Image (cartoon, rainbow, N blue to C red; front, side, top):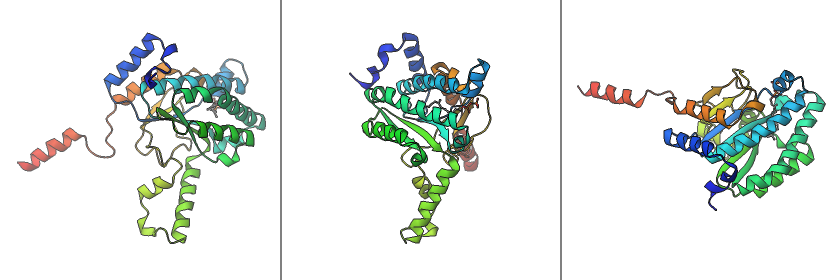
Length: 271
Ligand code: FPP
């Protein structure tokens, strides 16, 4: 069975058609990163407790992971728990950790069967021991998988990431391995927790908030942003496809001019 077929058993013909349409329409972003937000408000709007929102959010995690792999995304990073989230009430933090453990236990085999490699970024040492153990086992099991990388940002913040990179670079300078003059953007990127990943092409944020909330601050320099008012537990594959379509309509210039401009300018200069 090839990797294309592995999840297609449950896939509807319409869904397959939509994915084919997107692949033919334009470039599929290599790396999508998601700020999953709005679980609490989703629960509140149903007169339920915040934890019910997080539980419902797990179903979105599963659907988006599956659809991203099927459509051809190669790296999917999910902001699952920020450094700042440690400041939430104890009960909510432990419920989130429990959900993570349960999800890892129930989903790792499926990830592995679908050739998805699990990785994580963040201060993993701060996670409770059971959580860390499950995570490390899942990472180990899936380490050689090639179809897509699913990276969980856990106890993560962009400022933490930059700080730990600066600290490791400073140590190398102190040890005489690196000269201060050699430090540039590439060296910094190589010391971030995302060193093995390309920068995100597309960052999706749910629940309508217009901010990055300390997520991938260095790596998002030229990411395209897609914000939807949908709360994370309602964010499913059809909206992922909308985000990809929106990405395909953008012109990425990376601070330069569009290529047709360059051609026009050079022909003027030649005259
Ligand atoms: C933000 O919503 C969401 C989180 C802090 C946690 C995200 C966690 C999950 C979706 C479930 C577990 C994850 C995995 C990977 C299995 P919020 O609580 O900030 O919502 P609010 O802004 O409406 O209060």
